[in-house]
Length: 141
Image (cartoon, rainbow, N blue to C red; front, side, top):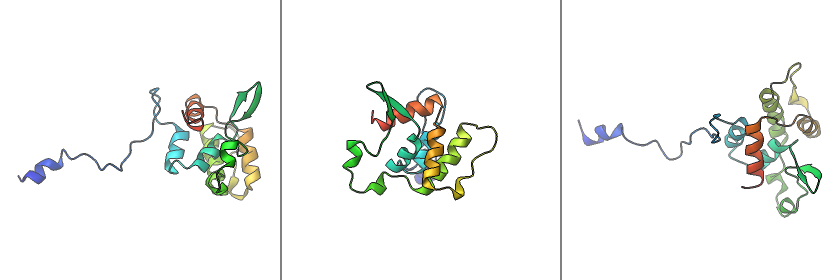
C-alpha cells in the first residue's frame, strides 16, 4: 500500500465543510440559526428573522432590530440590511413551520413585503433557543 493510500483515511475534511450550527444547550440545531447560515449570515436575513421580536428599553417595547436605529442609518446601501421580498416570504414559510401553526398555513407567494412583514410581526418566533440565539446575534454578544 502506498503512503498516499494509507493517509487517505486520516485526511481531515476540507476546511470549508462546516458542521450544522448548534447552540450549546444540547438541544441540537436551531432553526433560526440554520436559516441564517443557509443564507450566508447576511444581515438582511437576520433582520427578517428578528421581525416581531421586541426588547424593553426604558420601560418601552422596541423592535429588536430597527432600520431607524443610528447604527443602521449609517449604512449607505440599505439593500444590504433591508430584507428582500423573497427572504420575507421564505421566513413566513419557515416560521409557520417552526411555530407549528394549526389551521391554515400562510401562502405568501403572492404577498407584498408589507403583508409579509405584518404577518411576521403578528407571529413572532417563540422557541426559547431561537429567541436566545437571535437576541445574542442581533446585539453582537
